[in-house]
Amino acid sequence: MKIKEAYSVVISFYPKVILAFLFLSIQSLISQEKEFEIPDSLKGLDYKELYRTYIKTWPDTLTSTVYLNSYLKKAVGENNKIEMAKAYCLLSYYAKEESEKLKLLDRSILLSAGSGDKTYPIEAYSFKGGYFLKKGDIVAALDNYLKILPIAEQVQNQEYLYITRHNIARIKTEIGKHDEALPLFRENFIRNSTRKNIDTTRYLKSSIALAESYRYNNELDSASITNEKALEKLQNSEYHYHRFYGKIMINKGITDFFKRNYKASEKSMLEGISMLDQQNAENKKLYILGSFYLGKLKRLQKDLNEAKKQFLVVDSVFQKEKKAPLEVRESYEFLINFFKDKNQKEMQLDYINKLISFDSITNSEASFVSSRLFKEFDTPILLKEKEKLIDELKGTNKNLYLLVAFLAILTLIVTVFFYKLYRKKKEYQLKFEQLITKNNTTPTLEKTEKADIGVPEEIILDILKKLEAFEKKQLFLKKNISITSLAKDNKTNTKYLSKIINHYKEKNFANYINDLRIAYAVDRLKTDKVLKNYTIQGIAEEMGFNTAESFSSAFKKTTGIKTSYFIKKLHELDTQEH
Image 1 (tube, rainbow, N blue to C red):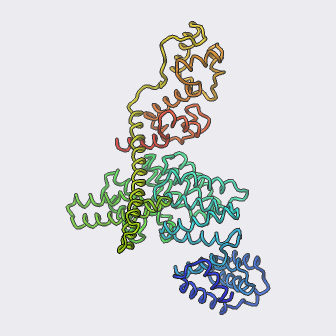
Image 2: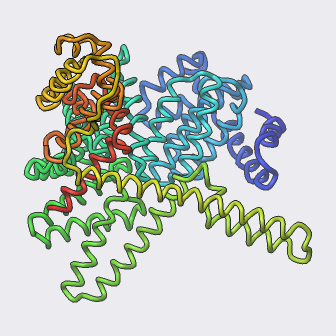
Image 3: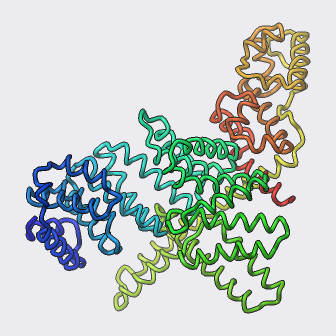
């Protein structure tokens, strides 16, 4: 590619403030292209043949880069921008320095942007996002992933839409948005597990992420099942066994911890950590989680010195990587109290400072990412912008008051928005407390006064008595119950039954049955520890519903809160009691 052509490409995509830097980068890359010569044995190969031989040798850096550079040289000679973009993107995998890796990926993006190609620049953005995510820079990772979605939709690249949504779910997990991440993980896992030719690596990566998400959402049975299926998948491949077994076992161990299977939990996590390649950046998160939950186990066993040892491992990894799951914050709280009890004030102060640093790193990044769509309205940012604008307008009062008023209105909008969120949270908590203290399993209110509803009085009394027996025997839990079947069981007709339920129960038949089932579900969940650990689908079937969606909808309509919220709060109560 000629220098002038490269320059024109840069002009169309990048502002002039960074033009000089990128121009020098392009010159450097072109210089390297000119210096490389395709070996005689490869000169007759086309792009497909070069790529095929590269794939066979990709773990061998020396050999594979010869094929890729030959691919690039051929593309440059033919001025084929898409093939050049592909070569630069693949060569970035072998770049050791961050600056070189990003320079190659940016070059790939510049060459292919706006081309309408199905793969590029999508793959280059994905590589950049993956690099930043491994590094722990979730803001930069999200920025690149969000750039993929509109392009992938435009060129109808379904594969990368699923991959990117999965990667965004990983970011949501990093900032604690587990309920939002779960459906994204689930859809990608379903796609990877139902392919005609299953890619084992993709299957295992998606199943590990899904099992972890199930655990974070307190769907522990589903987490266990997913972990077991992943372990079964490993049995036929030594390569995948060594790569993924440690990850799955740590995941399994943490799930068993929440199921209170503490012996199995400790065994799985110790085995998982021993199998984990701790030098691999992808494994740092699971290593730190495994150490954290081993520390929690030792704390439950009253072995405080061993707990301290595990929590110190958590701190050592965090100090080196400057990233960690939000839940391991408890490590620092333990260490502060541990050294306080030992009257080691210097150590206590040291870990107080480390906790402050942990909060600063994790909270600031999580807050920014979680409010990405509302970042312009975030109060601290808004106030900084206000100060900046006021400074710029010093010396002239033109429009100053209007600007301040506008910013004040925006601040008010933000305040109202967060206040509504707060009120909603309080409302959910109040409704939960009402459900906890309420002992009546039958939420229906019966009218006692007579009324002319077009049904003989003796039939009304007979049906009301039969409905009372129907409720006491919990026959409403039968699946697929209908007004026709209930009328037949009570030896009456649907018209009479419908009128009596509408008047005396003050609701239609469907709401009558659903309210009985939900009231029963609430009482069962409050007392049945086994049922609490079922999936939503499992609970729905126990209550006579055909689907989790219909059960969740009825639960929200009757109680005013979501099923997942109610179960989560019940688990919190159990934790407090212990």
